[in-house]
Image 1 (tube, rainbow, N blue to C red):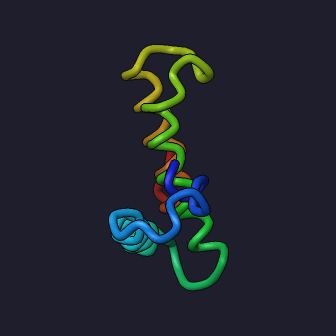
Image 2 (cartoon, helix red, strand yellow):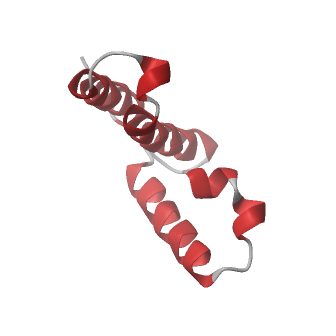
Length: 84
């Protein structure tokens, strides 16, 4: 996700293009459907999982708590009818 924030800085690097393509593939796999809403849900779900690992100080709690919260949030975004 950091690569998405720093797209300008990484422009032209082959490895960055590969990373962008793979992140795009993952986001499309997570998307709940066609169109902007589905893609946004996929991106937000992935961002939440990354955030749990990278932003411990800001989020608080223990790592296991953050990961559990990230999965709950991600599931609510990509499978809202089955989230609890």
